[in-house]
Length: 134
Image (cartoon, rainbow, N blue to C red; front, side, top):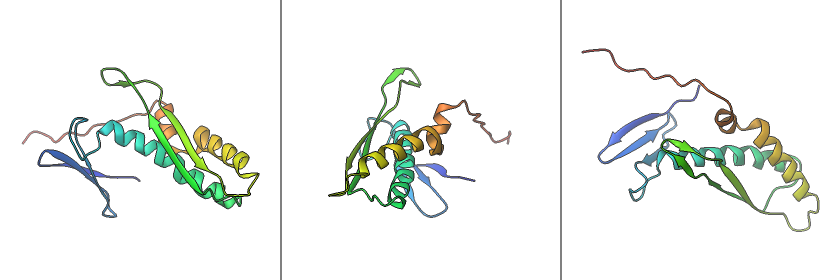
């Protein structure tokens, strides 16, 4: 089970996990924090990259650089348009097969293996639990 705690701390919100990691978030006009939408985009890019990296390396093609820009435009209130992931990759010097291996792995991860991407592509139930009356 994945779980995070989100709590207001002053003017921002802090998400923490059981391993002690912390991320600050707030509105898109606040300095020094991620907005929730930016965290969603980061989660998608991170999910793909943490899957692509070991699978490419396992096939003997450790990339010299692996980065991506993840973008989405807000098309309506509370709605994003298509999310685009643009990879920036530096292939290992002298490794002629790395580009093809990377492309195949990245495509497979995007289509099937990224849990965050799959959650965004498929309808998913989200439940809310509110405290009872006091």
